[in-house]
Length: 103
Image (cartoon, rainbow, N blue to C red; front, side, top):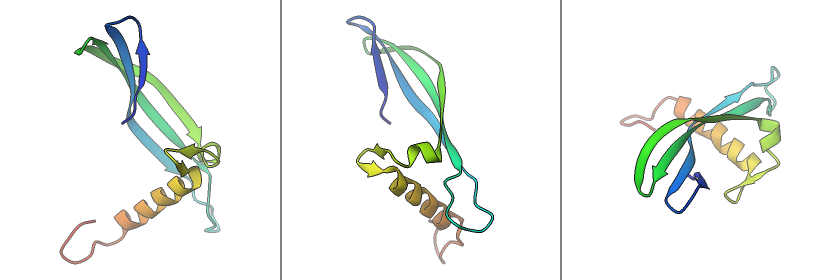
């Protein structure tokens, strides 16, 4: 996962990593596509001196609504494409598995 680097001097730096990301969808009662929901990112700081990991500490928590993320572009993909892929992933995982295997 990509991290945010904060350099303090030549040898000391911290990395902010997203250790867990949660996506919450609230479906519309009438079955139409919904953008009601949110993405929650839990982060962690990794503290380094050179190549030595000195410790870890909890980082900030970021929360964005699905509506805020839809118009954006992330890693070359439109927010709407990412949302559609997440919904499709749910359908595949939640559907009965085909004979002889898991998805």
